[in-house]
Length: 287
Image (cartoon, rainbow, N blue to C red; front, side, top):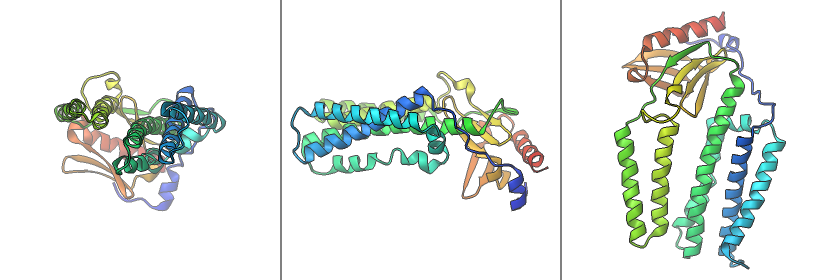
């Protein structure tokens, strides 16, 4: 497929934000949990570092979590466009988990055990809730820019190796159990959390050939663009962003500026047919 001019790119339409309706309850709940975990971690670490703990540390953490939870719930309810704005770009979705970095630095710093424990718990809770939040926001953005039923559907098998994934999870489980038994419960908790998160992500993203929602893995064509759907997550590629589509060395490559989307032949039943369908879709939009 040849490169397109700017005029042709405009003709493909602009996938507007949409998303003026109120955010759903699940999204608001995850925002509240994320805000609660973040504020609780900040307050607890600050309380320990400044020796300003006037009561048990769990009480300080609980107070911070409740405050953040209420604030996050109010923010999500007051801003109906928050899910779509947050899920519009990869950078915004990734920024949600950036607050874990200071906690990681604090955990690795040579500080007292209480600070390490609080920082590690903050890393786990903020990262997990932030990951869930970013995925929900991405799905909400895709729903906002794709309306109705897809014009075409193509079967897609997400890439992954169940044996390798299970081996990695097993290694982290063994390391975590070993650390916990040998007197390093904090490190053990980190490795065990990583193993559980990895296994859950394999199911959520469809990298394993079993599990609920596996039949929903497919490529969908809408008027505004292409959706790469996994069991519980979606990724959107606007037609206006596609510069070039081609088959190369057994891969279907969709160029979109500095990034591209790739599908191996093993992931698609008929990559040539998918390529022709993309060509037809873009030609029809330009016409």
